[in-house]
Length: 215
Image 1 (spheres, rainbow, N blue to C red):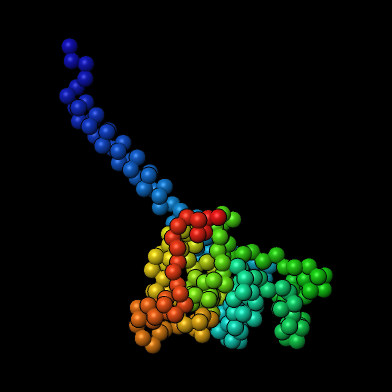
Image 2: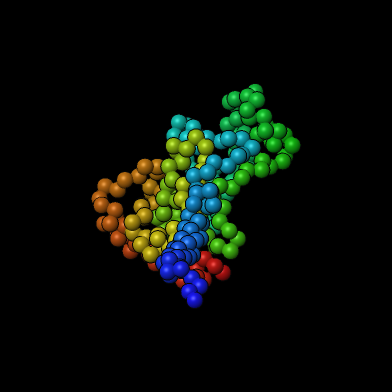
């Protein structure tokens, strides 16, 4: 007595193929999910106590990055400016603007503004800001064209594969130290020529071992 219809063979084979495809799709989804912008916060604008415009302060006014980020060349982190830095200018201009009241209140009460860090690496990843500056990595390379950002956002993914891409081939990203803070920098020669020269001049020899960043 035949229990199953002949079509059961086709259904069984199709079910196996379908199961393989579903499992494969799920695995593929899991491997790519961490690259989605809403997962890694890439190009997502954070809510800040004041929506500070880098475009206005860098492009329009012409402030140098180091005026606010004073430890960029000397410390492991670039630093977030204290309220006093803001008040150096805003004690004289826009002194009655309601928009800047949080800044004035912070200064009066000696209470720091709670800025939300945009480029925030996890605690298990070690990064030294000053080393990268000294080796010829420009602000724009990691942070993007901040001079065109009305509101600051994370230009790159900050994921390990992004870091390794530079560590494995740094020549494509290097620039002279005199151009570190230049937005829209373009080398006079080809980037390959400039990068190769600077790798020797700045003794660039980045490591890719796990212990380099995970200490």
